[in-house]
Length: 304
Image (cartoon, rainbow, N blue to C red; front, side):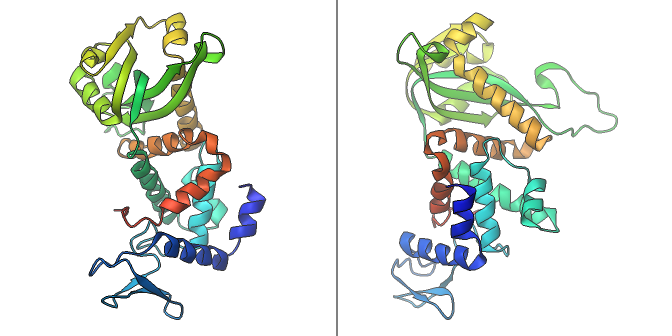
């Protein structure tokens, strides 16, 4: 969907609201009181009424729009810009695009959308052969005035994350040594030990055939999960055995520093979920927006 097509279909509040009504009818509504799934749409009240107990459900209830007073059009534009922009969009830029006076509602809106992306990403697990590494991402400065900045892995300015990428070798020719990149997962972790890395990887994967990593001590126990190949971390070895790790790591750091400038440690998982959501749907083109919109009405997902 191009910008012109989007604003032709969803250029007004009425168009967005009408589309949202049809989405809710298509996905169905579950009654909070009795669990019945048969409802009638009351156009004058703009609510769904349960056919069994006559309990009424508002148009936003139980969806990502729940408890939000922002217009439907703002939500549609936000989801479209967040999925159509390859490197992302900052809350300040979205605030300008929407013409909103206050920053906080826009910031909360974007985090709710990221929570939805994270919910969807959790439904998928990595399989087959994967590349694994530990990466460090610069986060906002939270140092006290009299606190000394530590160097290395324990720095207060660095957050640690585990990156895992499906990487299957189809042939010996072509880019990246003939390896094809599949799904990507990046999740923050606390600590640098082998147990922490192993537990994080267990949550991200399902049926593994082979794990390729560098010779870091944090990957010393991965042989219990699958065949483990540990390679010496050099430019030549990384290009041959861990080709996609470097690409994705560079893309994450460029996007975060160039677009968001400063990310708080407690919100890092949300930004990583947004990044992975778009990378894992890179072949869908402009359909990513429509896919996100379709799951935003799911009653299974309720934003905290």
